[in-house]
Length: 318
Image (cartoon, rainbow, N blue to C red):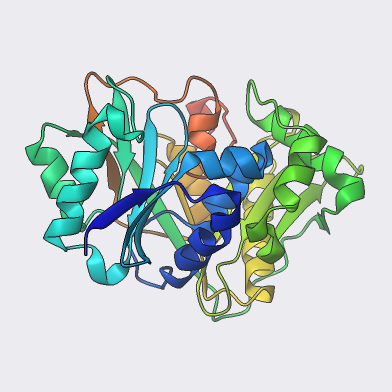
């Protein structure tokens, strides 16, 4: 049977989210997570459906891609098909031909599991390795310590609080309470939580959203940020510990996150919260390297900690 490139439409998003859940397992390479679609859902179901691509054979989805910007495809593949030659070649053919409606001409980035055959074929086709990212993982089989600050779970009434912290954590952010409501209405948010940390004076100082992929599977932090006026007080570590505890309550086997390796402080923050550093991963890029997203969102998409302070404050970046 031929491999078919498709756009799922709003009605097909449930199936795409479902297979992404099934493909998550401890020890898996860093890959597209249902939480990534959940975070994108802040733009609404129709926008999310328009950004998703699937590759199927005989009705079975073998690969899912998310167009996380005009020149960035975040791609993952069914575990038992990652070294399949026919699929890998079809993926390369589809992403390199603009007429097929995946990526436009010119500069582009593709994120894919590092061990997948598509990585090798893209390299042979002239796609080079981009800047490194650092995945981190925390095992959740042991109890998680108290974060040491007040943590509240966000509901509809607190959406504006989380949104305000997000805007204060990411320069140029346009995230609003309305975006939160759209995100919370999405399928993946049924297994997600938004958390806000408060200081002793009652100020909202940090926020995170966590996404479960179901019991016994890795959960994702996407995104985490510390308010620019409340950094260097340990709130990044505290909200990250709270995120791990929330995922544990949701039944996740582990918590995962990924941040640019150049953001040494973010890596240090996650490690201080009990996360273990894993081998670096790299996108494939075509053309001279430029950021594929033209605003702050590029760093958020892979859960880079939004604790952007001068590097002189390292190792603590919160």
